[in-house]
Length: 337
Image 1 (cartoon, rainbow, N blue to C red):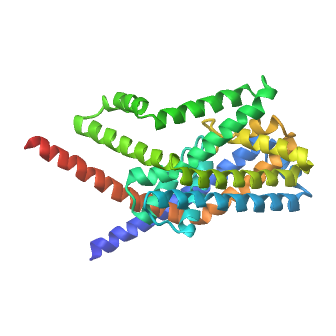
Image 2: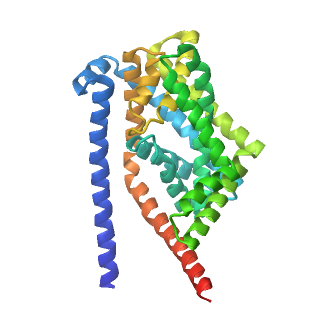
Image 3: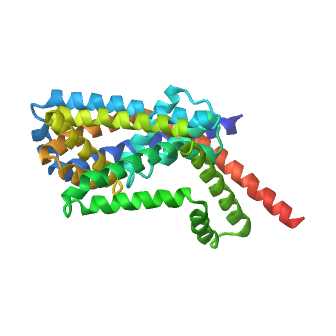
């Protein structure tokens, strides 16, 4: 009994430590972001001074469209046979937004969403990951295609955006192609044991089939695309709040927004520098800074979910570890017999 209480206390202390570290890291990152996009905290204060209402309005619009995006998880989960409540989907999306801003090229967003979704639905890793990736697929492919259209007239200044957009499209072609993915994973499997390599291939193919089932379902992908495009239009309105450009300005703002999604693939925390570079292709520096600050304000809101994020990683991670450990153990026993 005392041992269990000690383990619980130790786990609680570890989670508190993770929370403190995560908050400190986020604060440090925000200060670095402010340094990069505005030349320091003092300059940021100068930029936003007297524009607090605009900043708050833009942040509220961003919060609304980010909330709408979470419904894509509900749609994808339903297709895979899992019941995910809108509230849990909201938790998953904002948790992934928070961690995404902290990690290079938003790389932490997908595993975080998968952990929260898997913890809520008890879906196996391949399904939880495919549900999380369905939203990423939309936020990668749609902006990539749109960015090529908006970026080509700005070449050579926008050459980096065009190159990244093409790479994004090619990457997804690899992920959804069974033969190409098999070659990639086959190469990685050479460095593993035979059973581990076999398990990796099986799980990879299971994930690919699960994701392919989502993106090839006409009804599901139509709903995901509609939710995504609607959210992009609303998000572009958050830029319009700042730029006040009218209808013509809205088209420009929409283009800048799409390119910022592509620029966010740079391997910096939250796609930093890449996002600002992409926005500045069509917007003024002041407009880009104000909007980015509004976005960061929204990204800070999920800090209240840190405990939930850590719990999902710990609990679901433990379940996944036990699952794969048992599979590997069963494989070894079969090999011995």
